[in-house]
Image 1: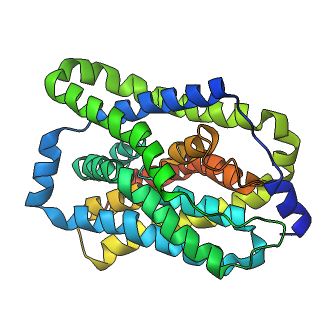
Image 2: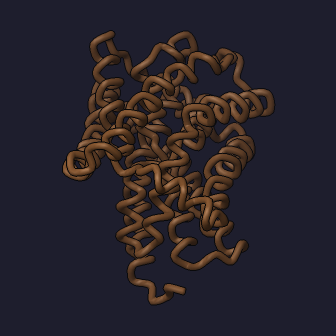
Length: 315
């Protein structure tokens, strides 16, 4: 990738007023509330009865994916900008996406395991997302060759934690309580909110880049390749770990999908709906990587789920 293209990508600017930022935060809170409606306390009890696949899934999502993403960003070197590398790490630090349960159902995977992994990774994201982004982001910035015109990003761990606690912690608590005490209401709201989350994310991407569409279209093929390789690696980590550990094939499918589907909407909300990154321009690379991830993982997830669905192997 030429330096001209990299500068074009990092130069993409998306600005929102306070009203726009608040809207994104409120809608994301409703999305996370919808995710929590499918989480029942008994799920966590079942985990301890057969913990192997769940522990492997957590290892893939919370340890291996961020670590290998950092390594991949370093290996890509000057082919990506430091901000693009940070975008990859931010996505890897986010919890599993809420559409992964639908993908697992389509792919004849272990749905109970999928729901468990989504629930646990989302609950732990309050702590693990800021920590992983801070840890691997710091390692990447110290290892990568940072261009002089790109300011050093000091990742505000406490600010990220507070934001994620508000965006995830409160809606999750309310969603779980609703699921426990008002199960009929939870069941009625669960699917509509899931579809709303997909529509919301796509709308957020389109509106965010509408004023920069020409620049985005100019560099989309490069962004596509970066996200394609990154997402392929994520899917490979899940399937590889499941194969090495010799878990049932249905569990391997779930590990593959859960590791390859990330809640990039959270990452985009952190950039657009907060002022965390306001002092670190230009960070267009982070925005386009995170935004395109959210679109691409739907395509790749459906593709992988369809392949699994048509496979005759179920052992």
